[in-house]
Every structure is written in structure tokens, then in C-alpha cells.
Amino acid sequence: MIALFLFILQEAALAGLAVSPLQQWVEVKPGKKATFSITLTNNKRTAQTLSCPVKMDVLDFMTSERGKISFGEEYKHPRSAVDWIKFEDKQFVLAPGESKEFKATVTAPMDADGDYWAAVMISLDESKEDEKGIQVKLRTASGVFIHVTRRKYTERRSIIDANIVIPEFDTVDNPAEKNAAEQTAENLKQNQVLKIEAKLKNDGLVAFLARGKAYLYSDGKRRIATIPLHSNRRQVLPGDSRWFTGVMAQPLPAGQYRLRMFFASDSKYERQITKDMEFTISEDLASVWAKNFVAEDTQTLKIEPQQIELKLNPGRLTAMNFQVANQSLGTIVANCRIESNGSNNNWIELKTTDFTLAPNSCRSTTCLVKIPSDAKPGPYNWTIYVEAEKSGLTTQEKNNIEQHKIPVCVVVDENLHNVTVEDENTGDITSE
Image (cartoon, rainbow, N blue to C red; front, side, top):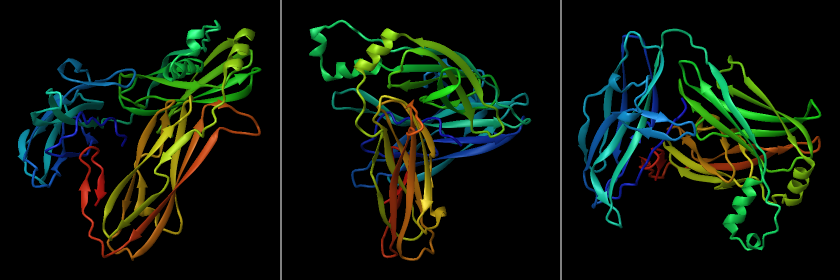
């Protein structure tokens, strides 16, 4: 399933609280019960570690059209599952190094139909003063999404709003602007791009994960550009709307243009939805746009680390993160895959295989490595391919695809003494 959110508001200094899973889907029949569990770990084990008092609350949350999530009673919605979820324990203390599983029961009403949701907010039941003397509450949330299986569901999506923002240029020769700070110059540069937006609405009863892209046409039928559409949260819950944005920095010649936006979802049986729009670039605008345009001289993606090297003993599970940064002024869509170099692909897995990035943004992707207990000592190799399609003009000689390789080398050594732990901030499992 698709992770909807991860909230770590502050990092605990005296107690490290790991929560697993950070989201889960629970299937239940109308009028029936189902169970799920959340595991909490106080994984600080030093002599200075204190016991960790913890409190759990089940809260409503809502997601804004721009992807911001808000918690609390005031955000109660028609598809709330708060009253359905009951925990055996809601307040407890975790000793240093202690891990405990907490079970909950979901009771679905007879008239329930489709997807419902709530958040389990886990808080350290004490406040902590920061260096400025401000009381800080430490907490993290685990999302619980409940699918009530009454029948076969069809996704219902619609584009309810869309607009095109044409670049704006200040043609007045203002000496003060020439001496502006670098940040101001960068802001001006970002305003001199073609920006498109589309608002997608979920009119159905089940959530979907949307993927958006736009094609630009001139001369009626000739496709000249591709613009990936980005959203902070691609998963759209029933009744919600979400804005998707595409940005292209390259200038366009004067003329008439047609833009086609389309959205697809994970379900291979669902049809794409599209929306067409038209706009005009005047001779004056085209001239100023071309004059002010400065081609980017850096590659679109920056990936860190550029290679992954691990030494593990048999039977260990490890999570390694790599960061993908979009250094361009346009949106991109990235696809990741793993290819074996003679090694078993069942040992390695990517948590995320595709994502979009806004201009000058980045995200972390997790690579899970699980070594079988009967693995033979020696080196094992794979390659992670990250293929990015960037927004911009296309020609027959050159496309907008950029490919990167991340070599992965795992040396299995049965003499190592790895300890499997879970990262207190991300919930990722790692080996030390």
C-alpha cells in the first residue's frame, strides 16, 4: 500500500521512540470486526536513557488541496474511522530498549461502504524544553486506512479546475534590480517559467494514487513538449481534491498552442482522464522570453550517495536511503528499478519505484536489503537505475530522459556481529 504521511515533529533526545508501521490498510466486512497492531520501540539503550512514558490517541485528520495534513476534532469528516478503532492500552511506559506490540480492534458499521481513515497519534507523555526554554511536545502519527469490502469498486476521478500561468517579465531597465541579492534573482528566474495546474477530484468511495502529465502541441497536432505534473501527496482520498502542478522553463516561440493534461492511476483497468486547454504566445512575449532565458548547465538529477556499499552477516535486514534531488527549474518524474549483476533480486527491494519532484526539491528513497540466513560469504552486486523524464521541449534528435546508476555492493561476512535496529525518526530497519 502507499504511505500517506510521516510526521516527526521533534527528535527525542532522552528517549528514541520508533513506530512501525507508519501506515497500514485494514480490510473488514460491513458489520464485522478486524484487528491491526502498532509496534513501539524505545531504542535508546545508553546508560543515560530514561523510561519512555507514551500516550496514544485516535484522531481525525484532513488533507488540504495542496497536500497539507491537519489533525484534531475540528477536522472530523464524513468518512472518519475514529469511533471504529479501540486499543487495549492507550497509556504506558516503555523501558530502555523495550519493544511492545499494541493491538486494536476495528468495528465497521453495517452501512459502511468504501474507504475510511483516522490517525493514531503517539506522544511522549511529557514536555521537553528546547534551548530557548519553549515547551516542546514530541509526537509522531501512524495512519490507519480501512477498506470496507462490500462490492467491486470503480475509481471516479474528474478534473474540476485547471489554469495556465504565462511567464511575466519586467522589461523596465531598473538599476536596483541589477544589484539585487542572489535569492531575489532566483525568485525572478522562477517566475519566468510556464506553469500549469490541474485540480483532481475523487468522486468515488475508494482512494487512488494519481499520476499526471501534460503534452504541449503546436500546429494543431505536432507534440513539442512534455511536462510532468507534481503534487505533494499523490494519493487522493474519497471526497478530496488535489492540485497537481507542472513547470517548464524553456521559452516558446510565438504561436497558438494546445495543452492536454491527463491522469492515470495504479489500477490497470481504470481509464485515463484528460483535459485540453489552449493559449497564445505573442511575438513580444516570445522575444523577451528568449532574450531572458539562460540554459541550465547542470544535470537535472543529483543523487547521494552515488554508490551503496554494505558489509552484513547472514540473516540480516538493512535499510539504506539514497536522496534524489531535482536541480532544474522544471518538474520531473523519476522511475527506479533494480537489475541484478548475477545476484538474487529477492534480496533487495525499493520501497518506492516512481515519484515526481517539484523544481529544486528532493526526496529520500529507501532500499531494503535482506540477507538469507544460508547466504554464502562473499560479494553480491546489483544496480539501481534512476530514470528521470524532465519537462521541456522535445526533438527527434534529443529526448528529455536522463538516466543514473547506483552500484550496490553487499559483502556477506558470517563473522560480523550485526544488530538489527529501527531508526527512531523514520521507522526504517537498519543494521549496526
